[in-house]
Length: 474
Image (cartoon, rainbow, N blue to C red; front, top):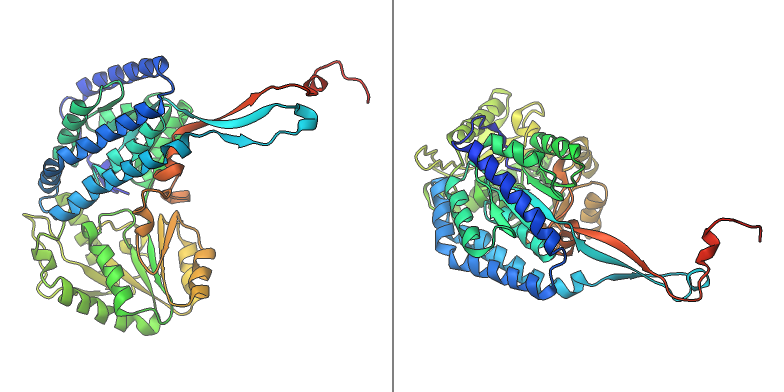
């Protein structure tokens, strides 16, 4: 997801102290869990309501911290996603908690087991770590925390050093709201991240790049720690023949402009029928001119997280141009501003598969437009790459859109829109293969951070003794 979070290569001051504090916090949470291994439903609801109050109370500060870390960030988007989206997720969890906590009965054969009963009980796992990326600092820290707390766990959050204002604010908010034996925040750099992965967690969540995800998983494997990995990937928008309309192109472009492309389920490239590429480009320009004519010069444009990432995006555009692709700027007079780190959207038409825009997750305001000759060709292009986190299919023919979805594989999918599969608080969200494993959100998130413990209770009138030696022929 956050593909450059691991590139910093230097440590922030105080990592030694931060590592010592992490070990202390971890030991205290482990001890506290043993004292209270199964919080009551009332206790879990109270914790989630405290979380809701925390987010609403600090809404203005969250928006300001986002603007400080990104140099430019739309206030409405920060409040909507980082605060109110998290609140909605907590409210959904509270409403669903009785059903999620209820044991799941299993059938038993009365001829063998008599009046016995069996059920799966969802037991808290214990102490969970959450390594958070920079692009959605609160949504991807506090959002999964909701699932963890609903399931009865304790948690330590490691925010990204790329968003220091958000990290400092989060640490203060959590410290003011929760006992540190329930939830705490560990701030630090690369060495703290390494130490974080080496702990014997009861579960570890990491959101970031596949390369670092592999390292996290290897570190966790040394302690047999189960992991949830949300790793992003190259999410395609597949426009089936005849679907290149003003509405579909507006949704693709509008989604790409969210966070200026710095979103794991953003559209990474558009697959467009070869005969409709010119129409797609024209409609994209029309949409920008009609709805956001000064996008890169406005407060609606999120700043790129760092100068280094800006350099990377500019190098991608140059690489595509050098390899013969047509590069189009749909915004008239769009500018790149180093002070605010704002960049305009760039369309790259028919890029060479060897270029970086087609080999790497872009995570910025570049949209490759890839022509295809028939639907099977488009499906083959998707299946030739790694399985993406999201797949977006446009078309009025339900059989055709179903065919694309059924013959491809992705973490989630959306039909006639983009990214909305990740916006629902009650539907599991995650990847497959190179885009990750495991789920959070909804009942899937509750169960991800629970131990599904099978419990058998013996009754009367059974034949259990038949399992015991000595065995005699019937």
